[in-house]
Image (cartoon, rainbow, N blue to C red; front, side, top):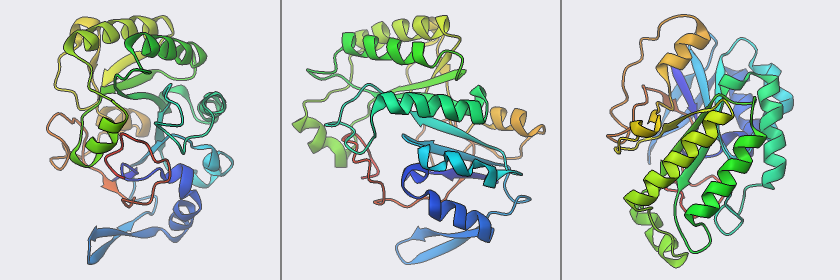
Length: 262
């Protein structure tokens, strides 16, 4: 079983104490629907891997030894957006240092950099993204092997927020311009680029489709083949294999303007 912690909330940032308590108890109750919970076992023999999703794993850094016996890796989102877009995310220069520290505590292949979602606005232009991506990629040279990108999808409940901020999806030509720049820049720093849940084929730029809950990566990390199959509950373009998400909606304090889980 693969544990996802979590697509619904930044567990490492806001709920690390709860998470480590659950690991000590070897199980956790998570919402199944509005009226029922389900028990998820967390003993070492039950968990193949834990995938963390976060914009700030710093609260976990001095407790990673409590996960000895478990395999895990991080999806670490680090963008160039400011406080109007990501109000709850700490100073980005500090997060660069946290990223490096986490990589040193684990290993580069277990800290995946996410530069997403990419959108266009008056402030966040194509040129802005080029500058921001290049600066971050240079800083993370040697500390990660993979970068996952995606271009924003406008979900119904986020639409009003994004319209107020005059945020839009990049055009096809903008996607191609950014993809070519991102791929070339990442390559110079030893980082391969993949897309998350994107239908668009960007293989001409050397960009492949990602599997954020990545069965191949997990198999390599744990040294054996997984039985987990493709997860049909995710978006059609998503290539993730099955996992159990132990987070809860409406509990994240990052407050990101683009977030579907708010």
